[in-house]
Amino acid sequence: MEKMCADALPLTMNSSEKQEIVCIFGTGDFGKSLGFKMLQCGYSVAFGSRNPQMSSLLPRGAEVLSYSDAASKSDIIILAMHREHYECLTELVDSLNGKILVDVSNNRKINQYPESNAEYLAQLVPGAHVVKAFNTISAWALQSGTLDASRQVFVCGNDSKAKHRVMDIARTIGLTPLDQGSLVAANEIENYPLQLFPMWRLPFCLASVLCVFFFVYCAIREVIYPYVNGKTDATFRLAISIPNRVFPITALILLALVYLPGVLAAILQLYRGTKYRRFPNWLDRWMLCRKQLGLVALGFAFLHVVYTLVIPIRYYVRWRLRNGTITQALANKDSPFSTSTAWLNDSYLALGILGFFLFLLLGITSLPSVSNMVNWREFRFVQSKLGYLTLVLCTAHTLVYGGKRFLSPSILRWSLPSAYVLALIVPCTVLVMKFILIMPCIDKTLTRIRQGWERNSQHSKSALNGKSDI
Ligand SMILES: Cc1cc2nc3c(=O)[nH]c(=O)nc-3n(C[C@H](O)[C@H](O)[C@H](O)COP(=O)(O)OP(=O)(O)OC[C@H]3O[C@@H](n4cnc5c(N)ncnc54)[C@H](O)[C@@H]3O)c2cc1C
Ligand SMILES: NC(=O)C1=CN([C@@H]2O[C@H](COP(=O)(O)OP(=O)(O)OC[C@H]3O[C@@H](n4cnc5c(N)ncnc54)[C@H](OP(=O)(O)O)[C@@H]3O)[C@@H](O)[C@H]2O)C=CC1
Ligand code: HEM
Ligand SMILES: [Fe+3]
Image (cartoon, rainbow, N blue to C red; front, top):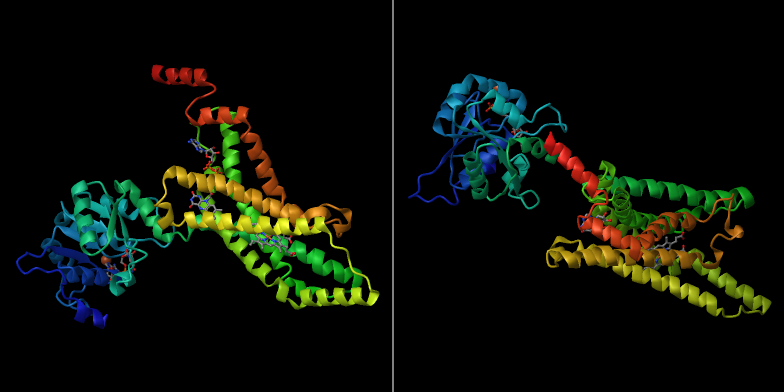
C-alpha cells in the first residue's frame, strides 16, 4: 500500500483536459485499490468516509471527505462497502437523488439474500440510477495489475446512459465491460464470482466415482483374491498394473458419457415428435458439460498412455520375460509363433494409438484459438463425427485387447468378470443406439424434426388456436 501512494500519479492525464471527478464511498481494500487505479488513469477521486481524518494509506492526490460532502462532488458514486452497511445511505437519500450509484458488492454465499444487492440498493435509494459493476475484479488484481484472467466486468442497470458512463470508466482503467442488460441480471452477476468451476464439478465427481469403484474392483480381483486363494502377495499391482486399468477404463466410460446425452436427446425428440419442447434439466446440464467431460477423459487417456510406455522397464515384466525364456531353455521347448495372437496384439495397439490421436485432435480443436479458426460445420464435423470415430476406435481397442479371453469362464474370479468387460457396457450401448439412430428411416424422421417438422402439428395448431381464442 505504501508503494501505491508513491505510484498513484496519472498516466493518461492531459493537462488541457478537465479531469472527471468520481466519488468512492468506503476506504477499505477495494475502495483504495479502485481509487488508485482511477487516479493513475487520469480521474480525480473524492473518497467518502465515516472518519475522513482517520483514513490512512490512501492514494496520493485523492480527497477524503465525509459521505455527504463527497457525494456533492460528483454525480457518479462507487459504493465500495458491504451490503450490510447500505442502510446508512438512507440518511443521504436527498443528496443521492439523480446520481449514478455503482454497486460493486459480493456476498459470501450464492443467493444469500432474497433480492440482489443492486436491487436492494435501488429500493433503498429509489431516486438514484443503480448500476452493477466491478464485482468480478479483485482488489488485489487492481493493485498489482495482474488482470489477465479477470479483465471482464459484467455491467447491468436500468438506465442505459448511466450504464454507459460506468462502462466508459471500466474501459478507461483497462478493463473489458460486458453489457448484461437490466438490473434483473444483477443476481446472476453477483453469483458468478462465488462459483467454483461449475462446469467441471460433474465431470470431476463422475471421474472420482469411476476411479474409486474400479480401483476397489480391481484390487479385489487382483490383490485380495490371490492372497485369499494362494497367500500370494500381489500388492505391488496397486502402483502400476491397477492404475493402468482404472485410468483407461475411466477415460473410455467418460468418453461414452460425452456422446450418450446426444443419443438420449435424439430419442426424446423422436418420442415427442418435436424439437420445440425443452429437454429435462438434468439432460440440459449434462449436455452443457460435455466439453469438460471430454477433456477430463482425455486427461485419463493421456495417463494410460504414459503408464503403458513404462511397461517394458518394469521389474515384474522383465522378470516374467526372463523366467519364461529360462523355463523354455531348460525344457528345450519353444512356443510356436501364433499369427492370430500377433494380429490381435498389433490390432489392439494400433486401434489404441489411432484412438488416442483422434482424442488429441478433439482436445486441440476445443482450444479457443483453434475453434475460432474453424467454422461451425467444421467444428461439428470434428466434434461429432470424429468424436464418434474416436469412441469406436477406443471401444474396439478394448474389445480386441480382451480378444479370445473375453467372457471366458476361466477369467472370472469370485464370479467377477475382468474390469474391461464392465467398462465396455456404456460405450457399446451408446454405439448400438447411435447405429440404430443413423439407420435411414429413423435418421430421416429425426432430421425432419430438427428442421422444425412436428408429428402432432395438427394438435399443436389447435392448441395454439385454443390459446389465441382465449
Ligand atoms: C477431448 C474432447 C474435447 C471436446 N471439446 C468440446 C468443445 O470444445 N466444445 C463442445 O461443444 N464440445 C466438446 N466436446 C464434446 C463433444 O465432442 C461435442 O459436444 C459433440 O458435438 C457431441 O456430439 P453429438 O453428436 O453427441 O451431439 P450434437 O451433434 O451436439 O447433438 C446432440 C443432440 O442435440 C440435438 N440437436 C442437434 N442439432 C440440433 C438442431 N439443429 N436442432 C435441434 N436439436 C438439435 C439432437 O437431439 C442431438 O442428438 C469435446 C469432447 C472431447 C472428447
Ligand atoms: N476486496 C475485494 O477484492 C473485492 C470487494 N468487493 C466488494 O467491495 C465492497 C468493499 O469491500 P472491501 O473494500 O474489501 O471491504 P472493507 O471491509 O475493506 O471495506 C469496507 C468499507 O466500507 C465502509 N463502511 C461504511 N459503513 C460501514 C460500517 N457501518 N461498518 C464498516 N465499514 C463501513 C468503510 O469505509 P470508511 O471507514 O472509510 O467509512 C470500510 O472501509 C464489498 O461490497 C465487497 O463485496 C468486490 C470485488 C472485490
Ligand atoms: C497410444 C495409445 C494407446 C496405447 C499404446 C494403448 C495400449 C494399451 C495396452 C498395452 C493395454 C493393456 C494394458 C495391460 O495389459 O494392463 C491397454 C488396455 C486398455 N486400453 Fe489402451 N492404449 C492406448 C490408448 C487408449 C485409449 C485412447 C483408450 C480409451 C480411452 C484406451 C483404453 C484402454 C482400456 C479400457 C484398456 C483395458 C484396461 C484393462 O482392463 O486392462 N487405450 N491399452
Ligand atoms: Fe455505515
